[in-house]
Image (tube, rainbow, N blue to C red):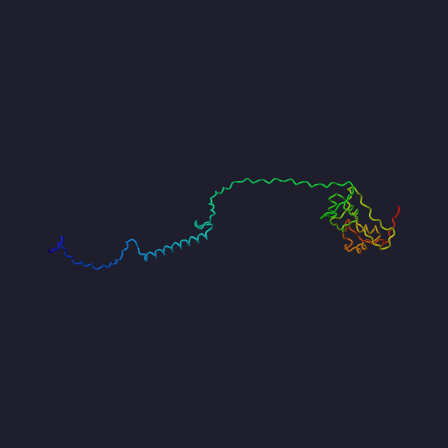
Length: 246
């Protein structure tokens, strides 16, 4: 028995030849054309620098004006302290102010120093003089001098104690002279009111020329003398003339 070869139901199909692959296509980069209103970076950089320069120039001018101006400030340079807003205060128009007529102030009457009824002690103050003290207490100047053993040449000092006589006090009697005085004996004479050189010479039996020669303050016989002055008098230079009896 022969074996039979089985017959396939689908006969083999012929295999087509392989399809060749197309060569690779190299991409060519085409230049991109910018929109007509957009400028390339290389073109707008100069415009940017120019704009910045203009800004800096404007800022510089503003700063110069701010520093040179009177009280002007730039808002972005202000400090945190708010600047008070100046307001225009209307200046009041001048009005006619009536002129006040000065009133006369009555001068106060000087305070009168009470007149003492008896002598009292007084302390010399600054600016005092014998004449001023005599006028202050309304007393006789010669009495004030004789009571305090002073004369016109006496010097007062602050704090000195002197006696102020009462208004009716009589002038003290001058120191009595010696009863016997040799010829040319010099005395110190207190000039009294109404005294003259001729009267003093006659009183002490001397001459006017002798009195003038003894005193440097007298230039000649016509030099005036005054109360309270001290004169040196040389006595008994001439023989007194006896007074005729009736």
